[in-house]
Image (cartoon, rainbow, N blue to C red):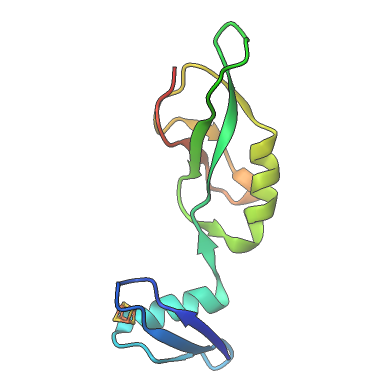
Length: 118
Ligand code: SF4
């Protein structure tokens, strides 16, 4: 049995999930059941972070570029994804939504720029 707070709406129901029996208790609506089972069986997160930047002439740039995964990725891949993000340096200019790295951590999800820079 696992316990989660449902974050799907502000009511914040306390869910008790049995991943083996695939049952959820404590939810006030069906969305809580969907959330609870997903969180217990296949937890995913959208990862947000920043990457290093260099100017077009190759000089160091004083800002970091905010990035995020295009969609949620399995929670178990977050650490590997962060290792890959720390190794990235992008060259300006960058447009919001531009793919910074395909298939981050083998997730089949792209890492994209959260805003334009440069
Ligand atoms: S179970 Fe339904 S009512 Fe409760 S927090 Fe989740 S979405 Fe909101």
